[in-house]
Length: 108
Image (cartoon, rainbow, N blue to C red):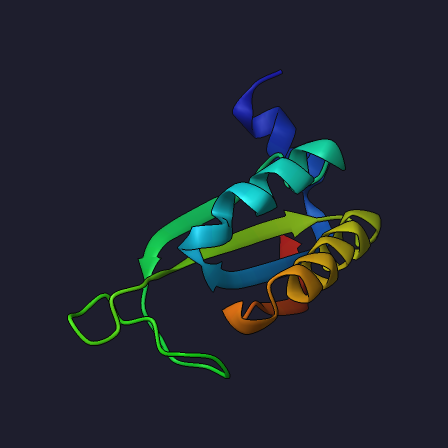
């Protein structure tokens, strides 16, 4: 199936899930996504800088760590599975500051 055909099949209302987390735990996310068969298609942004409710991650001499960001468009069911993964990793890595935002989106 070609690119345009895939777009037509998946077009419509979906969930947009954004996850921002320390790059130190990226492998945990990737493993759980694979195990639970979600987030097969995603956008990954490396080297994300910012400050939230945990220590800043600015990639400099004072705050050397950086974050990662995943943007995932998926069904309601997959969004629920992804939220469960986020909640699990928040408990496992309490001080890491894992942010998750879910919104409606529509592909045209």
